[in-house]
Length: 452
Ligand code: NCD
Ligand code: ZN
Image (cartoon, rainbow, N blue to C red; front, side):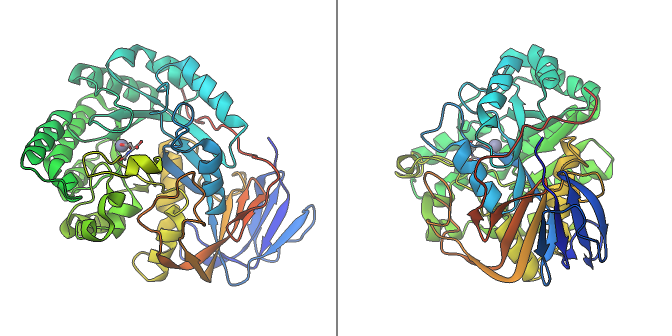
């Protein structure tokens, strides 16, 4: 695996569970070789002067939908991973609702092969579990999946939700193999029921999406998953949590020591239902953006550790799919490139301690998906994946800045404190000042390090 030799000098290191401290980092042959003060430049080809800057482990975005293969009319892996690279994300975990869905070991292998030549950052792959492929679980794991995505509610790709028997079996296998299952936790029957009711009422305003998928849809699924985890020991990770009721269930489950974790996304922390008026269907996403009380509960959960990871849920669509009324418009928008800049801004304005960023966005996802400490850490022996932030810089999100086929994001026009100065992948500078500075994609497929 290609790796560079570099010294990052004079910066302030931001690691989880620590106050930031001044230190140099030396990366040799792509791996962290030393962390300390006044490190020599012996053996390095390049020195970055990081004086006045924050130095963090590269971000592991555990939740991206980069649409390749099969849905590349929406976006593709080249665009997606170049957006990641310029904005400090050095590993992405790619979701399986591509075409064909990643429902067998051979599809996983083919997807890895296809994406390998296009990856500007390192990547891991999820498999999917539905009713018809639970027997493929072990083979998909053996092939190198980081985990599985399970869709309990209807969303992009129309993958049918597994029945309770299949869920029980998948979670039993998860317990046995230590493999996490990431759940889109919205009860399909309830979503259908409420959607029909709201449609029948004649509503087609953007906020009708919230009414069509009320909190009970999440609450019912999360409740069931906690019970199934309790009985099987399976590793349940609830992704894109959006409702305070779900947060309360998660908090209680974690207090009891159950094998359940949760993720939320920047859009649930930064937007609430009053924003439907301002942004319209641009903020349509599943689960929906909800009221302020949900937003506040999510912030509390992120700060107290109830929610342990952040993911971008990068979910690009073609422009024509994001048009039309609320029922026609596709759910989701680009996110991988705005992910770190949005959260850095939150840290710089005092909404969260800056060391929570590597905790939530690097360490915890890497641990959960068993690629830590190779990924998501800056310690001797880890991959030299680094992001350097200029706290005095500024990031303005514009269409031109976004590297997506269709640069659609509610955050266009936002001015953020702080800027990503450099992204370093295994000791190689791959981006500077939001520009790619690599002649070719250098990312590789990452398989879990844990037992299979
Ligand atoms: C995602 C997509 O478009 O792939 N959409 C979304 O609204 N979140 C699918 C998903 O994660 O549910
Ligand atoms: Zn989802």
